[in-house]
Image (cartoon, rainbow, N blue to C red):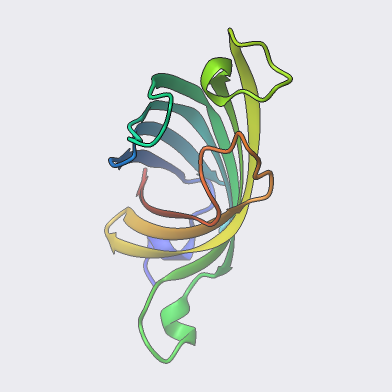
Length: 172
C-alpha cells in the first residue's frame, strides 16, 4: 500500500463532473465539485451545478430550451478501502456509500405544477442515496462508477431512477 492509499485524511480532491446527452432532449451539464477527506473513510464535497436543457421530442407539443442552475453537496463513506486484498479477483480498489443533496432552479413555464405561476423560477430538491466503486488510475487520479436513487422523485425531477454516473477524481 502506498502513501496515497494509506492516509487520505486531510486531502482535497476535484470532481470535474460534466455530462452530455443528445436525443429526444439535449442536456449539457457542468458541475465541478471540491471534495475533502475528513478521515481516511469519510469525505464531503460541494460545488455549483449548471445545465443547458433542450426538449427535442418530436411528439411533444412544446419544444423549448432553458438554463438550469443550482448546487450539490455530498458525503461518502468508504466501506471497503483495499478490495484487492479482500476479494479473490481484482475488480476495484474501493467500495463506498454515497449521499447527495442537490438544489436546482427551474423555470416555471417548462417544469411547473399547477401551484406555480407561469413566469419566474422555483427551486426543487433532490436527495440521492447509493453506492459506488472507485479504481485508481495512476498517481493521484481515480475513476468511479456510482448507482444512485433519488428519494425525492417527483413530476419535476430531471433524472429518472436509478441514476448512473461515471466520474473522475483528481487528488491534490
